[in-house]
Image 1 (cartoon, rainbow, N blue to C red):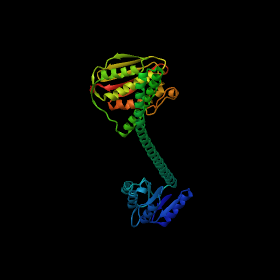
Image 2: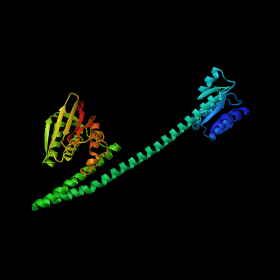
Image 3: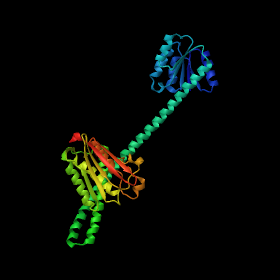
Image 4: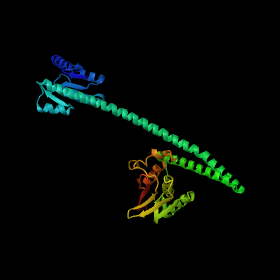
Length: 370
């Protein structure tokens, strides 16, 4: 709806008839004070305002309207037959008007301007509604994300207690079976222990994510031998997967300032992934490269690989490649945790891979931390 403000009844009747003839809804006010009362109750798409009026003139009305939050976006068009000098036109724009038309005016030009300002107001309102809707959706996404993180945290903590008990009972069984020297039972217990350890690793990953999201993940920063940490990680994996051959290249013989346990967690994740996703191959390569600025660790396999278009998503939370999700178990959070750990050490993670020909996962760390 358009509001016309003019103290002369003949002007109101004439302009109102013209606009209504062109399919606009129109309201009118015969004074500045009446216009302000109407603006308090109704949102208008355009206000056509006479300048010279008794009491409050058009400039004062415009300035007051702009101070009112609900009407501050309503375009104001000044229409005047008396105040046509440059100083009045200038003041009109300074008062917040979008245009200043002097009489006599061309009806076609006025109609075009009214249509344009009316359309702009409607589009602006539509944009506001879209923004409001998006904001509401984002707040709902954030609430759901918070609830999900709370659930992960609670579930992870609750799972740790029975897992600890199960590990204890398995260890007791292992001692009893070792005394009886029953090979079949040893095999079954070993498999059960392996599966419990896998479940424990998943719970630990969920806890890590929960702590990351809440900013509670702690890092124990201290100097340590990077080469010793790397050796320890490789030896542990080699012990668990004796049928695989882990080939070493290069050296990481330096003292590094960081969290040794967390960085070993990254190396172990890279190694287990390399073994997991190359089921028909038996060789894994670990390469250490020291340059002037960085220490780079590369873990390469000759496994299934991953397509180029999916490589950028590998380090995202809960991402899993659909083609391999049925063959290989996992939650899709290991690499996300690796990226967070490396980023906390001011480094970067990445992957180079070719579908069907294997992958090389790497991370770079700044040499200034040595």
